Length: 139
Image (cartoon, rainbow, N blue to C red; front, top):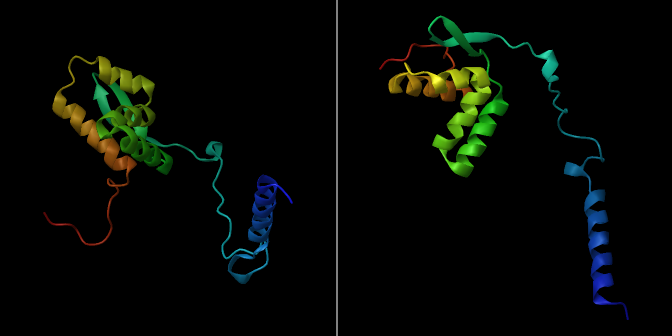
């Protein structure tokens, strides 16, 4: 009589083989109902930047189009440790370390200015800052 461990191992192996052999949606293996999605390499995507704020005469910019991966990182971090702790990571990634450090060390930065910068970056990162086409919104 075979041991229980070796019998269960053989059964698990056989189950994996049966599962792997089953066609998806009745089609042959490798015949998919969709085309693979091709994402360009990072070096193929030009990054256009636009001004977000100035400290004195020094301009600090952000990407005109913030990649969706930035939003994903922010949402994951916010879910793990909270929004207020995710914001510095988001700001550093979007602004860059130099601009973040400039804000951090600015003695002239006011709280409302910082809050506005943070909100703009969050909104643009999550796609809330996009211009809507069609009828004008009324307030």
